[in-house]
Every structure is written in C-alpha cells, then in structure tokens.
Image (cartoon, rainbow, N blue to C red):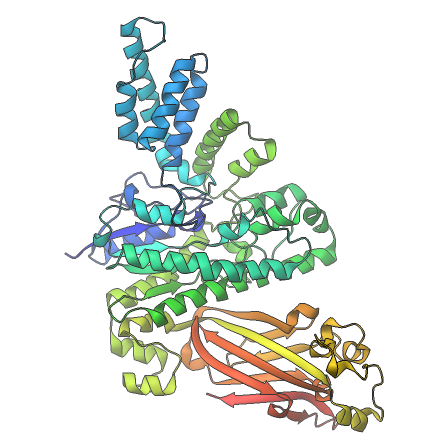
Length: 602
C-alpha cells in the first residue's frame, strides 16, 4: 500500500470555518470539511494517507504575512494570558507567567517545564502549597488546550500565525506528499493605512499589488519548503454577488467581518456609511456588482501568479496546481452559510465559549464578540465544501494517476502528441507534462488592457454628421502634459463625453455563456483589468477565437488599444490594435453601422 503524508495551511476556507472537526483522525468518513473529504477519498483509493493535527495548521483569519513574522501558537499565548487573569491577585505569578510566555515561545511542553521550574520568590505561601499551585496551573493549561483550544482555536479569526509561519511550523517538510495552500484575501482586508473612501478602483489596485507580492512569495516559499509535494492552491468564491440577498444591517456587518473571502476590505476601509448605503436599492445593486468584480479580480490576479510561477520555474521543479471553488456566481446563496443557518451548532457552541473567554480577558466590545461568535457566516456550508472537494478530487486524481494520453484527450481529442499540442495551444507551458493538469479545464481569462483615445477623427465626424467639432482647443496638441491624450479625463472635450455615454467593449472567445463586458463608466477604465470566471468546468478546446466589439461611436475616434490576455494565468495573446484593426458590421435591417469588430481565429 502506498503511503502519503498530507498537510494543509491557509485561512478560514482551508480550515473549514463552522464545519465539524473530526474526533478520530484515523477514520474521516462522513466528515464535512473538504480537506478531510480528500484524505478519506485517498484512503478509499487504497492509499495510506497520513494526516494528523500537527499537519493541519490552517485557521480562520490568517494572512499570508511576511517571512519575518514571528512563529507561535496563539492559542497558548491566549491561555497563558487567561491564567494570568485568573491569578490576578498575585503579582509574582503574573510576572512569572509573562516571562514563561516570552521564553517558551508558546510551546506547550516548554511552558509546562518552565512552570514546574518557577521559583517561589516573593509568593508568601507554604512551599508545598506553592508546588500544588503550579500543578494546578499546569492542569488548567493542558485541560483547556487539549479539550477546547487544540480542536477549536482555528475557528477564532486571528491574523497569526501567518500562512508563511504555518509553513515554517511543519515538521520534516521534505516528506510531505500533498500540500493544500490558500491565502490572500485577509491580507487585502487588513489594510489600515489605506482609505478607499468611494474609490473602488483603489481596492482593485491593492489586489494587484498583493498578488504580485504576497501571493507570489507564498507560492515560492511553499515550493521551497516542500520540494517533493503536490501543491494545490484552492481558490475562492464571491463574498457578494448579484444573486445575494442583502440581510438586515446587523447581519450585513457579520457577513462582511466574518473573514468573508471576497469583501473583507469593505468594513475596514469604507466605514459605517457603507452599511447605510445597503438600504438603498440602487446602492445594493452597485455593491453586488462590485462584490462580483472584486472576486473576479482576485481570481484573475492570484491565478496569474500561479501561471507566472509555473512558467518560470526550474525544469526540475514541480508545478503548483490551482483548484477553483467551482461555485460560479449564481449558486453562492446555496453554498455558503448565512446568519440564519448554522452549519454545525456544536462547533458554534465551542467557538462561543472561546470567544467569551477572549472577551473577558481582552475587553472586546460587543461587535467584536459578535463577529467572533458568528464567524461561520459567508463560509462554505456542507454542500459548498462538497463542491470544493469534487473540484479538488478531479485535479488530484489526474496528478496521482497521471496519464499523458488522458490529458491530451481531455484538452483536445484530435491531439496525438506534445508537439501537436504546442503547435495548436502555444500558451500552454510544457516545462513538464505534469503541468498539463493545470490547463485541463478553463477557470479564468484575465484581460489587462490600456486604451488611449487620441481624439476625434474629424473626417469621419464630418462625413457622418456634417460638422466639425470646435470644442477642442487649437493648441491641444502642443500641451505638456497633453489633455488631449486622455480625453475621458478632460471635461473640456465635450464631444467625446457625449459620444461615449456608458460605452461597452465586448470580448467573446467562442465559449458559450461567457462574454466579457468592459464598460466606460468613468475615466479610470482607460487602463485596467477584466476577468472572466469560467468556473473550471470548460475544456481548453472551447477557445475558438478572439472577438472584440466596439460601440459604433468609436468610428468617430482615433485610438490605440493594447490587450494582454492570460488564460488560467498563462500568457495567451498580446494584441496591439487601433482604429484600422476593426471592420464595420452593418445592420441588415437599418443598413447602418451596428458595431466595429476585430476577430482572430485561434
């Protein structure tokens, strides 16, 4: 029988927030969390899958953090602080416990040893009674740690230990065969120095920055410390989307503060006014749209980093496989827990008990305590965890039972060799054949674009309308910086603003039901990114062409466009276009221009 060691690090989604924690790690049948489902499935496949608490370090609220962050077990820190509170009448004991906490670095065995070696000093009690007191402290520490904290502490939202710290805590890392990782949303959500106010674009740019820094570092570090492991990065899902029901204000606060993977930044950075906006129907619709955009941006940019890692890794380095949630945007309400439906009441009871202790010792206010107690909100329920498991199972199975023929047939049944694959699908990185698992199904298309509108095409304008514009200053071309370079930013160029009322650029790749729509709602759309979430169920062969449609108003403009397109995070196409790249499409009924079109068959 083949033996495999499993490990998992990450945040509340990999932890399985609010779902049942196993009593017997040797028998994981009927468990609710998707990582435990994966382990039990491997055992059913005849693999001796070894998985124990020491290798399950994911916990609620974890950030990726930095490599320099301190490594510690926060549950032990909390317990020592609580013991200090319990013996608050004895200053010497508090001082001694504080020293133990700092010296032992929150290791349970080291703490017990330090407590037993604690000198009586100025504690004015009988020496024998002092020894009994020390044993009482140890008993309380071990009892709480083993019965409550060791099993349920992962339920408590806490930034630390960071995910990078979790990686460092894994023992004998070279022997790990499968490593589950995730992370990133909580790093974005804790930005206390940035005020987004009403600038949604600022939030999106933060995603780009953190993907290129922290997510990239996480991938590099995970591969460095676990060189032999199949590493699977589990994706996220929309925390808020157009199918979401907006609950009462108190429940909204719970949902967004419960470490929701898509919109944690809103509470921290938009303030209480954000919640009052939720009562306005128009604002609800806007926020739902933004919630979906936020999720897609994370999907595209996090996925891009996995693609970059796999494209640039050494030939003898194993790839990192991405596994999407599989939720899509329309089923979110059925797959995540809401405030009115508790996925596991026993877990909630234990979490509340810990939250109560934390509140008593740290003077948490009511809202913080409420968030702690209801941390299951907006996380995958049992059904959602099962969807995660199915997506993971497909990808892990293709790696463990690797077949080049099966991979080629799944991508395109007409492909017979790696050479043919390279010729037809040039974007697929084949540094090793095992990388093919990462492109078996489409999960995302990322479009980074820069659009420069150089001005009005006066000859076309005169031909179509019979007049020339006189609103553009005659000396505009000589200005430095030139206002004319970015007319959507310049309110003086009135015709452009009139010609482009809420214009939309359409992207079509030939994949049924997946169309990209880039809208010019404001000036910040000149340079941006757009992501199509394809859920990871569509084959690569469905990519048939690239079609870009522009509104008919663009016939009046001279412009340049640059598109950098990544599929599943991998470099797919680079396009540089201008007004001459597009052809007019005539409406047969009206005999007028309907739109401008660029089309390239793949």
